[in-house]
Image (tube, rainbow, N blue to C red):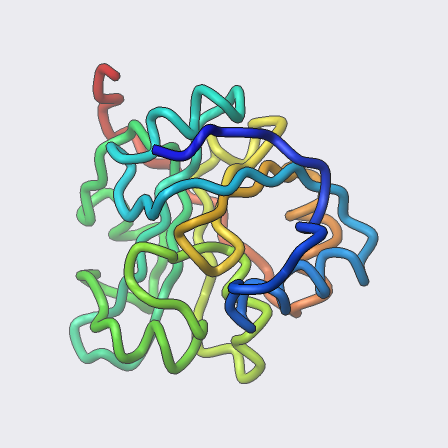
Length: 188
């Protein structure tokens, strides 16, 4: 793995970075949101994020792209990375959704402009037609920071939760639904 170094803000040299990553930095900077950034080898699972988590001094959140049974409603669920996901816990907390399952990656790319392994709240800046409803676990919403990808799994960001909730989400016109997930926390 690359040597993990925490930087303030966007990279000085943006060569070799994707357009979607650069757009994320542009948008955060436009909003005046301060963030720390760490480049690393691709990490596409929570388990692969352990070294990054330690270097960031926090846990990167788990982001799941879900849909209802008819594949007509889509959800981005943000939850603590070490918490296990149990779809049945969302039943009743999202009345219109019914039973949820993992959505197909083509919808993730279409609505969020994100590929599997890079799912992030930052993708909501690409959801101009509001196809995706954001769900945030209450425990995560109460953390001081949220760790997420800038739409690419080779970089992680550390952003104040209050900036995500009070600046970023209003700017992208997405209002989160806070959910309560009791999922057991896995030992790390």
